[in-house]
Length: 190
Length: 329
Image (cartoon, rainbow over all chains, first blue to last red; front, side, top):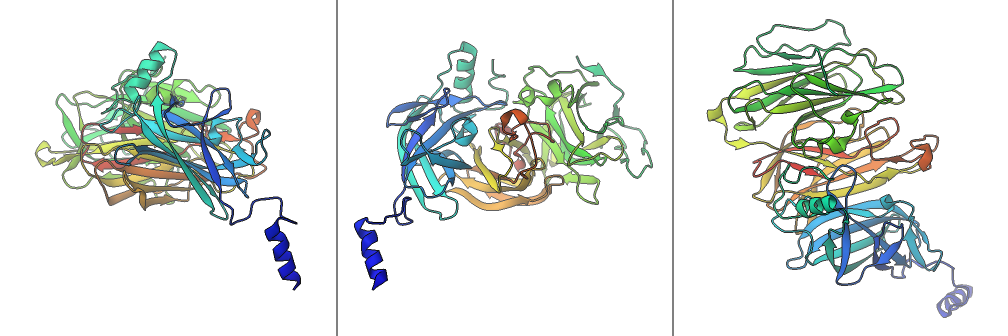
């Protein structure tokens, strides 16, 4: 009898535990990581910057805001898919810590002090026969709790873009991300 | 500035090296028809230090040649040896016979991987297999790497004598490059070097995992014939799988749980469909007492210095080469 009462209390909201329950859904909002170490929600049609890592290539810094998480350690996965046939051009995932956002504690975010805490989707060089910039692709972001394996995914149509302001860096990005890359084609970055 | 050095490009010679148990030796090819040898001098690796040197050599032929076998031997203490074709020059260069010397105290351009970002891999050997100082990498029948007359190569050696990796004697690396008759060549070998650059793992991390794709089989299906992976001492597991552009990561074909002597798997026959590639993963565990970069919460980030930085590098050999070798970042 006591257990039935307790169950009724939980259903009615009385005595509800503070955190999300395993049956609660996780909600994911894709977000790009910006140079000022903030997240900006990604909307359909948004440009997303192709960034240059230390040795070469260009990546997308892809993070997320997640609601309904009950674990701090998650796998954050970013995928760039074709908008035409859904094929995968690039995929990356990593173990990341998520914690309540100072602005909205129901929304959890990664540690924004470093871009290593967001997915670094390796888009370029483009060894495909497609230009991987200035065209629309589908960005797929997945968050999975490490222990419970609860998971959620969201997609946005995005335009990977070379947004460099230095001319040499801009032309290097455009060459690196253009179709049919071969080693040595673009020289080295400025 | 590169300095001319006393390293040896040997052919027609009959050197059999030192007899020290800590010093390797390797007989060179009998003639240029058979191949050629590149050998570094023996060099000290002072306690508490790392030594990374870039040796420039040319392929000693006046006509294009095909190489089918690479025999590599290294003294204990080696962290890696990589051979690249020299392409775009940034801050690292040399003429045949030059060496650019680097140490942990004075790294110089041989430690800065941005300087060889578009240099195709030729061959490599990571660490040293237990009880095995010689690695014979023979390509499948009819498969060879093509080299142009006097093409410039760079042999990079990295020795460590600090913290988790020690060099008991001196550094010494020897490689034999062996030919195949042109008429026997049916397919050119392609090489893939992939490195996940924005990794970061910190004291207390357990099984922190990084995964990335490298899609490169643009022109046709390819077959992977050999592979190895490279991490530093916080690395606990490295894997590689095939990658299908429609379904993503597939079956694992390579696994290493030994950061200092990762297996160099040869004799593979991994089919990768057109538009596919590889998917590679690195996992790290960092003891809470360790410290990489004191200025970054003692975390370990991408970089060549084994005691204080980390790597997640994949080396893959495949055929046919198609239009290019591959570097993925």
